[in-house]
Length: 189
Image (tube, rainbow, N blue to C red; front, top):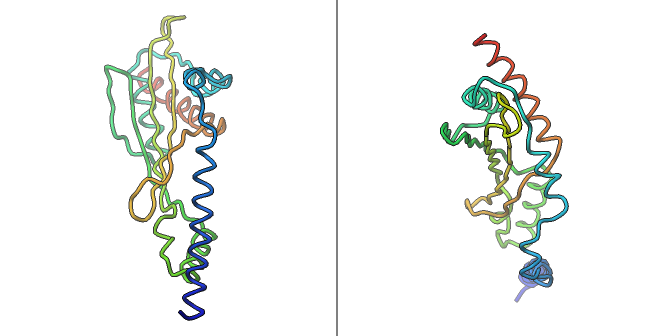
């Protein structure tokens, strides 16, 4: 074997060991069955962050305003279930930053092992909105939004899934929804 082949094997072995160490670390702490069923203290905080109450003439107005707001934010409406008060929308964005692309290129050049095929390529962000009549007051509707992100690699395989719990993201969506709802309600007045 020549020095270049030894260096390539050494590099790939190092990357392999790092990946194995990362994967086994996650396996070390398995929660008990009772812990899996227990809600965390932050569950109510997250639900509060995801929920707002709006006054409107009907559910249809809130759904129309929600669809308009999501489209303004460049989301594609995938599904509207008017009888259930549910809207699902998504958009795909590039997951590559310039530094990530450069790092993957260097890794491929050094290792020659094609590791960049497994790195993040794009994110699919999905927003689901559920609108229900308020049990507290007539004419008000409780709107809950959840945001999920799925990251794919260059081979279209799922790299990760996560729930977005950034309060700023939810606040931004609810502000746009409030403006859209104001326009929708006044359009019919």
